[in-house]
Image (cartoon, rainbow, N blue to C red):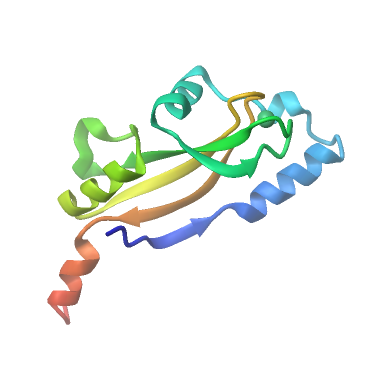
Length: 130
Ligand SMILES: [Zn+2]
């Protein structure tokens, strides 16, 4: 089971940025700049969403989950599927997940949210007053 904690939601920043894009205060070339790495991660490790791209509206957005944390060693910074996150959450005490949405058509990309996963919460519940 995935128990997300310390969730940081970036939807306000996303909305503000899109408002600037729609008002032509920010160019689409500035926000549709997904790197080749991000596009590849989206293709091979991404989770397709029901959300249409807010910029080109041609394609559904893909969410890519990046993991970071000292415990992960060489796996840190890698993109993982949701299924794998479930498994990793039982193996490690704590790691951070960054969710990035990507449009594989125009290259729009934005941080959606970040949160912590891992066993540490379960352990502190078992050992109160630490
Ligand atoms: Zn797009």
